[in-house]
Image (tube, rainbow, N blue to C red; front, side, top):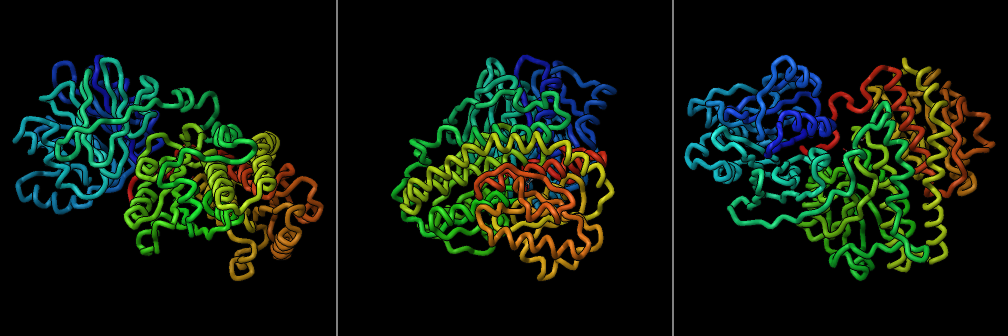
Length: 618
Ligand code: AGP
């Protein structure tokens, strides 16, 4: 949600910042802008509504001066529509200071009223502009940009990553953060700031995450971090584990196409090195999540949003079955307002690809404040949520750039399965033979998933192109197939802008079956008859019920499932696999379907309307 990049050093910062914004565009893409302190010491800005291409075009029409200090922003609008005027950077009245911002300044109305009463004329409808005016005033008092930040951040409520440059301080960018991400890239004679490491990973892999309520001042040859009171902070440097190529399209038509093809590797990498003698061992979870502590946990709550919450829903079945501990799933944004019962025997597991989703972060903070133990399942090294949790299990999916989550989803399920198996072992709830069989099944899943993606793509593409005019699609599943149905519906909504609903197949007769009319397309995730004949039979009955009412059934079922073949208008076969790995295989055809339907409608697959990859506002 808004991408931020800044540079100080000897190079031409405009090109470098535009390249960084290109890599961050997935975070928001309704407008973009840059500010450069040019070689003559002037502060110049360009900004445009629309995707980054519009700003690039503007820079061709009206080039900006060269200079080694600059910042850039790609926006996902919160306050004020996506217009040229509301695009960042925002300038102080004298035009000498430029600000970019990610987050929401919740008390902006009262700050604005105060500034207006003092004669300030606002040029945008954003909350950000108050920060520009406040910083300029504070700067006039101290003559020091870092000091001005210290003054102003104390007055701001809400979430912010705020960056500024001042014409009188060339070679300096100052940033501050609260509840919104900011990472420093350490170079040789140059330094960077970014919302995430993608902003600068092509230039340096040395990174330091800026902590909560900290201010950072970068110059070409120095980086200084302080807390909001001015106390020195030692940042923890880490090396970025992936290289710039991993975040490039590499010849694929869309990032999402590439990322679906990367799912088998994402899955395999998440499992890699986490078993010993055929059993899962998670040995580095930290003192607050020691085996002894986890053995005494009485309740688990999984908190997440969107796709990550569906990964949680799949894992709930598994963790409860393996660790014999009650597991609940809560949407992160509902969690704190429900005043959940929490204590030190409650384990709250957050699931987040970005590790920056504000709803999920707030849920984790709430859980910690009320004494619960917190574990993060996250795909982003050094992100805020893992840093604010007692322990972390990283999914090793590599950078996910397409807004629609795909490879992160399967790796989240895999990581949560690892947690479930680990808990099952240390709590003595799972015998070793069963545990080993489950691990074997998991380890075999990546290659089966590869086969599903390869074998089903063309068929699904044809199907999607036939259905380009479809207005409504339903998805049904039971047990772990139910969250897969929900995920299939979410993918279709976000990518193809089609009404789509996922239901537990058993729920259909309690109301939603009224939606089924002649020609209604219904995807059904069918469990294997080899694992539970009863469950399978129920789903087959549900298929009959909707067929009797005219539905067109697309079944995703185990190959050779004779009970389904006669009733499916289309059948997408899955290889034989265990009951817990079925959802990992079944989701891929649904992801491909959503992608290809969006393609058939000529839509932007990677950057659907109104969305952003990382949702850093509540
Ligand atoms: C799914 O395609 C979306 N991108 C969205 O639902 C996403 O999964 C959700 O916003 C959570 O993001 P996170 O995993 O980064 O926390």
